[in-house]
Length: 384
Picture 1 (cartoon, helix red, strand yellow):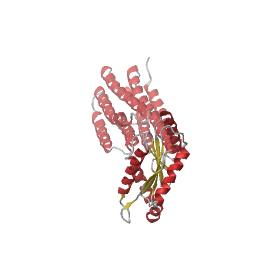
Picture 2 (tube, one colour; picture 1 turned 90 degrees about the vertical axis):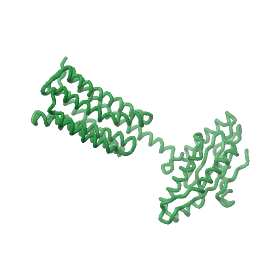
Picture 3 (cartoon, one colour; picture 1 turned 180 degrees about the vertical axis):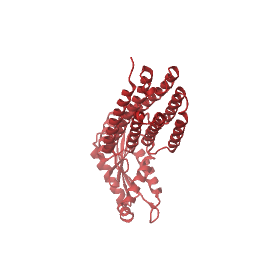
Picture 4 (cartoon, one colour; picture 1 turned 30 degrees about the horizontal axis):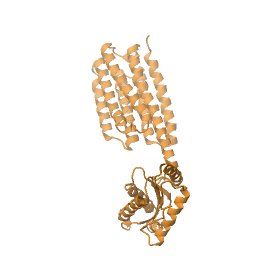
């Protein structure tokens, strides 16, 4: 059975047009730079197929060279979208590679059909490879939809290689695009439908990342990326219930930056925000993987320490206090800035029955005792 390739080209034009429109809508709803970059690639691919169709009114050599250059431009933009999605930056070397591909495209036109198709196919595979490699190396364990993108691009590369092989086995000349046949049509379809599918996969990856970001915002503080108050209370409740079953101790450390209002008043809220971010980064470095840092509000933080007795909790609190005291915030108009903190430690001894509110109240009470005693110190509540 023979397949009419011009019909396939028209179908692909419609497919890329619909993908471009859908991606435009998705980009506006998410304000995503990677989606915008990928969509530019869609328009480049759409233009390429229009140029191929345009050989009815433009010279054959112009349709061949410009059409393939636009295809390589689309592939380069897809690669840049992947780089931007994974690294929040583009790769300058990709534009150099694109320029080389365009030069090679023009230089390959005088060759015979089989050799020319082999060159174009090799260039397509070469410009696809960096994006696939980036997903395999940096994105495979992130958004699962990226695996679909990589798989589709690998299929696209396979289609290019099969097209080159078919051109050698069944050479067609001078204009294979308009000649019906199973081989040319099958490889053409495999390459460009796979590429089309990778676009839908990229949209899914962007939506997946957006959903993950929204879920993170629901449980984390946007400024410091610490667990927020409601999520921390829920986690503390689960930790205490588990400790009651296992007989392990659970400790809660309440932390409060000393004289933080004065920092905001003197240096401004932007500097105050930077202090909070730096403190959170410093505190996390002193914690185990199982420990949790939460922002309870303003300059007040909490450490949830599973399987930790009072002695261990005081040790952790002292480590965080000393690191905070040594922390220096630079690049301020009025010079460097240092801060200190006060801490209150409360421990639920293994097997004891206590609610999160009760443990929080005990830690908060001794926190204010530490402030009343001069600040930059730690107070321990009596064991239950």
